[in-house]
Amino acid sequence: MDHSFPEMKGYFGFGCMRLPMQGDAVDLVQFRDMVDLFLESGFNYFDTAHPYLNGKSELAIRDGLTGRYPRERFLLTDKLTEPYFQKEEDIRPFFQKQLEWCGVDYFDFYLMHAQGLTNYDKFKRCRAYETAFELKKEGRIRHVGISFHDKADVLDRILTEYPQIEIVQIQFNYLDYDDASVESRKVYEVARKHHKPLLVMEPVKGGSLVNLPADARKVFDDLNREEGTSHSSASYAIRLAAGFDGIRMVLSGMSTLEQMQDNISYMKGFKPLSEKEMAAVGKVRKIFSSLEMIPCTSCHYCVEENHCPKDIRIPDLFACLNKKLVFKDWNTNFYYNNVLTHGHGKASDCVRCGQCEKVCPQHLEIRKLLQQVAQEFEK
Image (cartoon, rainbow, N blue to C red):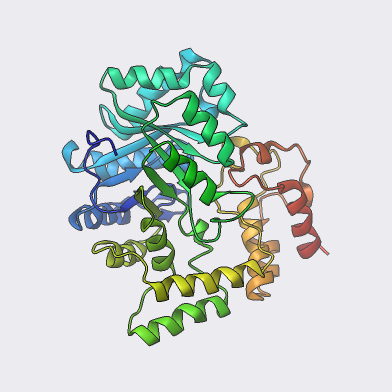
């Protein structure tokens, strides 16, 4: 690793894509408590982006973190996201707004966001990378990196064309490790080949590795009994990711103080998974592979920035279908018809415009999947 990197304390980062909410507003009282506990526990890395919570994440950072603590107490990462610039001249004004929204004079890390074949050429055409490198020379960015959502060969191309990239953020968890659509293992190996330190996002796959099916949960419950421990399902996923060589930080998006406390309980004195724990994870992975779940991480890119003209709550509908098929929760029928689609579009309202699929980091065939949702709940 480049030893000029600022000190990342621990292997646990505060991902601010998911925050405690009160309706549509961030619960700033609880968020401040979470920030305080995080810093008091010896951690210091925060990650945000303008699309997160439709801009509310950056403002929460200012109100809950940067306006309350001296700059040297924390490291802050922000990102350049594709919808917010159309030409090179748009980038610097948008970057300046991000600094103001976050309440800082510089970012420790600035990432080209959600890089892949669908947007990389636009970033190149608009000289986004070159602009970021210039901002680094000016001291307004300390380090330039990318967050990545595509196949391994695409990452290899980007890192070959821009060797100045200093760090790579990837989706990495035990379900996606050998998944053909995500290629976590291959992407990880490419980053290591290029000698880039890694940041991990989606270690619990949008909560899928927290709320486990009963037979998968039993595997970890049995292990806890055998070992005399009480580790949460999330702990196995996050510790697994943090245990790989070259992974410098694992981000966790937390919506409650209790989730923060749980993460700190096993990351403050971080230890990689033991052989027994790895074997248990392998059993859980096999259980998941036998299920037909929609691998949505609820990032909500598909519904933010008006990507859905029919206002269909796509991630929520997918979660509802997963819950019915995997957990046999028949209350989902009521939830679908009376909550998720109340004032919002139904799955059958999809006009098949494809805007959602263009921004989906998981490359899901959303239009086809919405047909499955409609068939299940709108019979």
